[in-house]
Length: 314
Length: 284
Image (cartoon, rainbow over all chains, first blue to last red; front, side, top):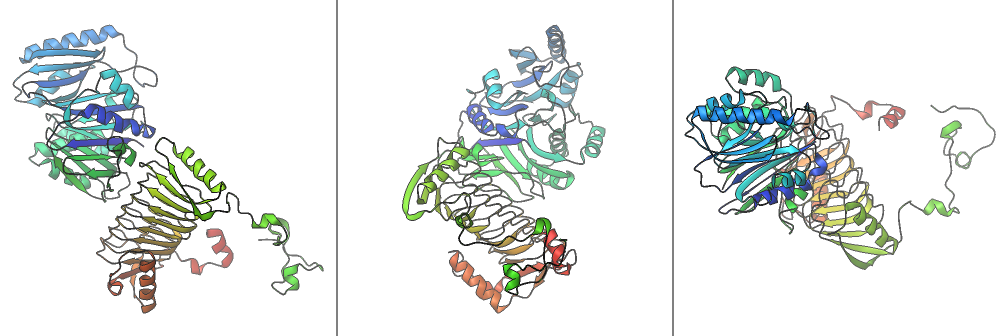
């Protein structure tokens, strides 16, 4: 059991960091092994924002192997050197935690796949997100703990998706935490609640097409699957509709891009989702209490039906 | 099976000619004695006055605190309780075994009104998954939409949703009536064993999948039939019953019930009526 939540403001910006924190914290009983945020902030769009990690959180409950912090410094140096070799200029650098970094990069990215593969060829380094407005922040602990750790409550933007995770299919670590970046697409992220049963068949097929997997978490498959469909020329909505037959199992998932937010529910409708939709706001979550954290007044909500796909734009 | 033996002393039921067998061991009969007061006591119930009304604001309460307070108010004789600010909380109103008018001014989360026996409930909002699961008797009316597993395993009572409901509505139901004013999701009536479901709108795929018994009435389009779910003739008595039920439910006032489809079990998978009475008892 995991909890997912998402919201999109249409025609305006809001404090989506704080709002999503409230929604995910309301779902913490569905899992607090890790919590992740994919936030689409208001930026000038000039630079790429790269969120990446050079190690794992090895705190209590983690399934990761303990490493000396000096290893993180070494990896960071190699990342800096590699970025310079790629011709990327780091405009702004933030190191929130020893293993977690945020770079704003001035770089004319022609091939994000090659760029990402080069960076991630450095052992222990994983790009969590890459985009002009997307920032994926994920770590161990509940929504409030992660929000406080990364000071997310002030982030202003248009939309966001998030995930409160109870680890069942893979380890308790950041690499298995959601959201997943839709590698190698700029500003694409995915969160998922459910289990996929044809993970390995799909993974092998996608890896043969050059796509990369960083974890053994079945949910990562959705991000890669959708990304591959978009690579082949499908729209976000077309890719999501295709996933209803291409993916086997029970699932409800959200996908977000720079300007849109979508949801898909499998044909068994075995994973919950409650949806609120108005002219200026769409909010959804695994349970109504998530929506109530941003809309405490009485509202009309509903459960999407089986096999339903919906996409909203900002 | 209980042991049988011959004894000369007859029980009251035997003297009355109701039966002749003599049971021993754990199945020995116990007879109702109207002089014993405990026979009139139903655990967890109170004498309430429907005209004694109060409001309860649960905004700052947890679900257990709210449920405990409802119980406390019933113990004070309140027969009409209005719950303010439920705000989607889970498991509100569970385990009420009383006659009670309960009104929720807002929406409920998951498992609302579960395992109840007797209350008349109106929810002026929506409900999450598994609303009124295991309802034994009473009436629950939802003014807006409901989530999946609506009325799972109910055994009696009327469960009415004026909006649309999610998947697996009436899963495993063993009695009672579920009435839906809007549409219903996939696997409606999945493995139902008794009771009736009425859907005025459309219904999703696999309707009545693996149903043992019971009846489903659908006013709109059907996504697909599940295993062993088959059409049946809509009789005039069915139509009369539907009209009465819809009227009582204050729903579908001008709905043309004569065009509804009636779906029942084909009884190819499993049929209780093929069982011996003792087997039937064990199976249920």
